[in-house]
Length: 64
Image (cartoon, rainbow, N blue to C red; front, side):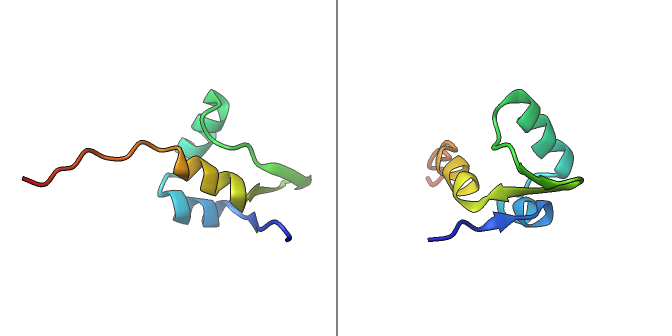
């Protein structure tokens, strides 16, 4: 099975974070690092983004 490579706009659409927040979290070590494909060309692995989403805490039940 081949891996899906995501561009930054696709990552932003999936995780609902801004570009600056994504790069800040990368620097903090709390978000997957992109792969460099060439000068100025980076992509994220779909599987790593999915795994990051799966590790997010579940919100408390807010129903009464």
